[in-house]
Image (cartoon, rainbow, N blue to C red; front, side, top):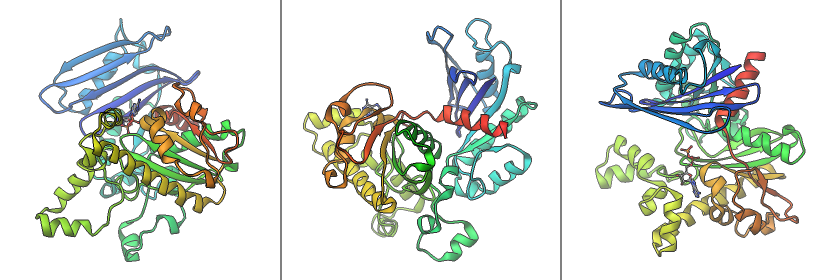
Length: 402
Ligand code: ADP
């Protein structure tokens, strides 16, 4: 069965087609600049030979509906397409950012599910409407095909109240569901399962700390296979230092900026989400550029790495205290998978806690999941590539089987 995985943004649609029989990716694409003067589709088809065949189309793409039709036309193209006919698509999976407290797992999409997603828009005003657009368009075009929603928040729904409640008036939780939700759940769950396999245990036997370091960054404490705490909060702004997002700051900063800089709340929100993090500290948000600049003597580039890795170390310490016993620490996503400096700095000085890296394994360049801790490290450390689309595909297969 071929699955169509869709991640719909406000002006983009990211997609993959996966053959579930052997979990191979047949095609991956991005439709972007929807609604702008000129839109763009980039599709990479992976024929059986694994030779990539790239197609780029630039033309006006007025809305998500026409974007989806363009993607389907490309996927079924007689020369470059990877599927003969749309009817070969057996199911459609949607990545949905916020499931609120309503969804503890993936859901087959029904009118009732759509209603709940709509109700949850205030929790993710930028993301959920775009996800809903993608769902509506896909249901319109593929009216006979089962559709599944996979939520970034669902894996974290096992957190206990002591971890998810903010110490603010309880009424705000009761009336408006103000609380920590956490994100990147599909990624934390995927690498946790892979880590359990590498530890030769079942997931419910594992206590893990998973560290997702991409443009967005988050960490999760996993006890007996379940998320018990995570660093992103009610929105994807809290916690670690990210590419352009601040992570933890004093909440009174808002008042300070208003009173002293005359900024309104929207401007402060933009500052914390788009102009902060690594970019705010050193003007760059791609870790490869930051390392190059640091080597060339850029003092604040070096400082940005120090601030980010110090924050990671603080959270590791906190999650060790939460978990008591830790079987594995996992690094994943763009920085986590590729950056030995950030990994080493994040674990610096943790020998007393039983964490000892093997420098040679840490510096090894490979795309394979691997252990990078020394043989005498009581906590094992892993690099495990995340694969959110494959995780979504596996979730969908499970939902459709149940
Ligand atoms: P997203 O959160 O957008 O999915 P990714 O997981 O793809 O992001 O991570 C993107 C980030 O990974 C880039 O901003 C870059 O900083 C970092 N990155 C990618 N490759 C490397 C590398 N070889 N070394 C260090 N950092 C890298």
